[in-house]
Each structure stands twice: as C-alpha cells, then as structure tokens.
Length: 111
Image 1 (cartoon, rainbow, N blue to C red):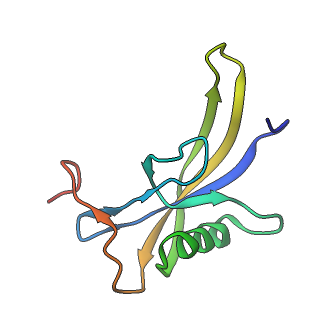
Image 2: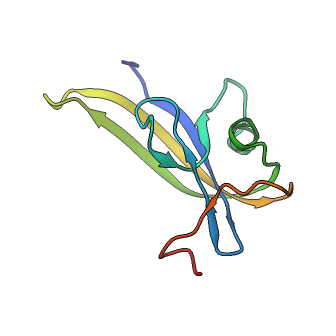
Image 3: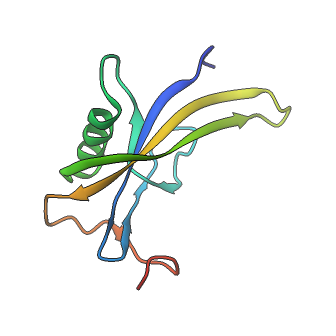
C-alpha cells in the first residue's frame, strides 16, 4: 500500500463515434477494459504522461488537448481498509497515427 496517492493519467480518444479502450494489465483493474493510461513519472507533465502512456499501450500517436476531469480512485479490501489510492486526470486526445483499430462501438458511441 502506498502511503500517499499515486498520480496517474488516462487518455480519452473518441474518433468517428468510437472510443479507444485497452484491457488493463495491472492492478487494481487487471483484466478489465478501460482507457489507456498509467502513472505520471517524476518531472513529467500531465500531457506528457498521457501521450507516453497512450503510445506505450497502443502505439497510437495523438495530440494532447485539455484535461477533461480529475478522478479519485479509492480501492478498499473486504474489511474496508484502503488498499489503493490514485488521483487521475483524463486528457482528450486527437489521434494522429493511423492503422490502429482498438476502438469499441457501443450504445453510447453515437453510431
């Protein structure tokens, strides 16, 4: 358990009515679908971190836009003790690279 919150980012891409998602590899959401993202490294800006995480996880190059939200992620164990605390920011991205088809179409995707 970390004694202080873990700063993290997600990259939100909506392109032609479809949303880019990845299957999470690490706890606390391993195996679940979510936005590409991860921890902010020391000395890295929010936009730099989101750009790096997006490229690392998907191979997609994108242009950073504004921060769209801030999230508090609190994960408790069955006894309600805090196991994980992350503070994340979401950045809207404009895709630049082509050829990646990891987009998910759903009832709220506009299609």
